[in-house]
Image (tube, rainbow, N blue to C red; front, side, top):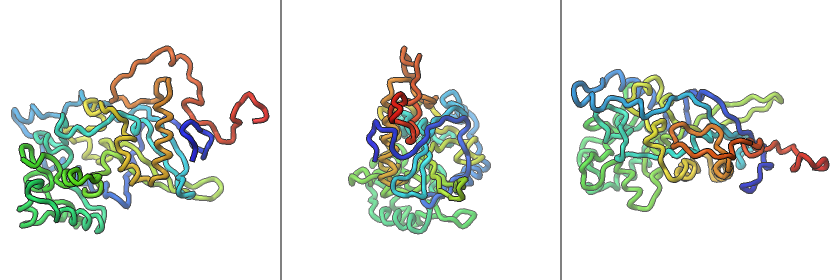
Length: 340
């Protein structure tokens, strides 16, 4: 593995582009396409509240930046798999986004800010996902799960119109979501369980829940030499990730300036989740590249527009290309040295 300052290791590319690609993400971990469909159906069935409450909770577009802006991407081979490569959104992964549930989160449904993004419940990715969540559900106590008795008496799983299984919705939101004022703590009971036991929340929560708002998608790349490689894209789960219904969400955090004030960038704060999605070797390489980007004394290429403004000094007058784009490994270490 290359050192943090070495850009001459395995071949990689950094590039910027405009609109974020919005192909449907289907992974073996989370049924994100089911969330897209649920968002669309929910938007059609549950109109925004009217009257004073609806006006107070109307979407605040002033807090969100647009979806289309320049992004910096890096592409590199998976150190653990020669037939796979990663394409990662550095703009998102080095942004200062953080979850602000209970601290300014406006929620995806008007009038239900305290639900956060739990209004729709969570579709299970497969039987193993449901079984894993079920094992942790059985360990929840009434002290940390507000609807413990209801969940055990009437069930914690429901089936949607397509026959797909998901966490049950109870009183307008996921049954695992403790409401504001509950003595055991507001928010996901499974999340609270993990924190109390010193675990990572990804161990106890449904796959789709712990992956948000990171989006993983796959596509096969046919190369000119008749070989194929699987490209894994790691990026931002923005409104488009929800499908057409995403544009009707009351609010979404990844593009909201109020959610971009973290002390650590996403690639650090989401280390456990990204490691699970990419493997340790893949994450370690991503971390090196993100650290290189963050360490540059120059203004970042294509920063996230929802991030706080950073001071720009005289250093922006000259931009050495090798500090922005990693060198081609076939290039000599010193371009002025003909012997390389």
